[in-house]
Image (tube, rainbow, N blue to C red; front, side, top):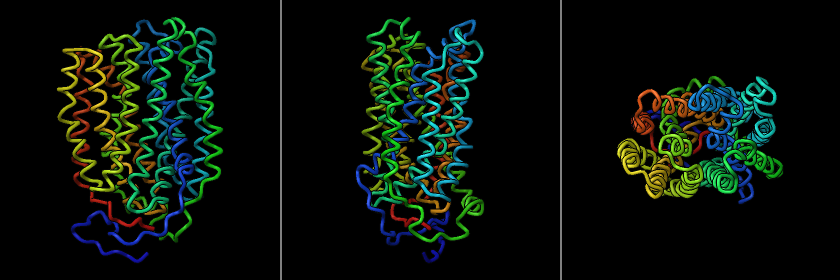
Length: 439
């Protein structure tokens, strides 16, 4: 690909529009394969968040229920520690050996982590070995998920026609909605048919056991995927550490873009625990909020991808994030003042819709600014660092803030503040809808 002149209107050195290389023909089955692993990995992460109260009691006994919950959400955060390492190692593997082998590796790792969570006996049965095993499983899951997003998203935008890149990539975020929806439905079912003591004894394990049914299907689908890495020559300056260093400003801004979306996402996933512990809703009702978040994320991620292809990445990233920064606190205050099931569902759905539209535009804009030789690594690193620093600590921070300040609106203030930072980062990014993918 010939070099492209840099102008003042294109300060981040992103290639202007030109005819894309012929994309790899992609079937619906291949799209399903690319997002199946992502759905499975988020399903496990989200299920852990939903059942944090019960997991805390099983593996992390403490003198108070809040202490047990804090330990549980802290271990939830442990899974994020390994994400940057997974992003670097598996992302680099994807940029060297191919998207397909990297995506097969992440499926194997997430299966191992899920197996441990499903089968590890409680603290009462095996003592300190139980929390140690759970921490190890969380680290393995974090390694897998840190390395999954980059290769899978790179594959989707490389395989897509130029005018549908955002729609294809939005399935990556939509798969997170599927994961949240399915995990929430399991939660509602379990809470509805089991007694609280049964949920605590074994019921919370059921979704993890069911999750083990998906890896063989995902492996089967991914083995038949085409490869998108080697269909064009790569420039030497766009490979490895040299390529990452050349695009360090884009990567820094990308981390800040991920910040707002990930905090909003994990506050949304925390709504079940928040509704139970702070708003005092019954667990089954609280789980319905999770189902709502999952369904809305699935739908509006695809809507956001379609709109991004039609109107551009930047407006679809920016305006929903501005609305989130402005409206989250008033909506939480209204919910706290007048707690009701319809209002809980409405607030959860509205915030999830804004997050999904903005996130769908963001997840395609970031890799579109990176050359093929570092596309998977760069997105993996930016995503993993942003999610690790902020997503991994979100549930612990807001649980702690509620406890220390006594202010049940603390999660909303946290969302508003981080969204404001993300808005500033988004304004510094160029529009990439019509840009060619750089080799």
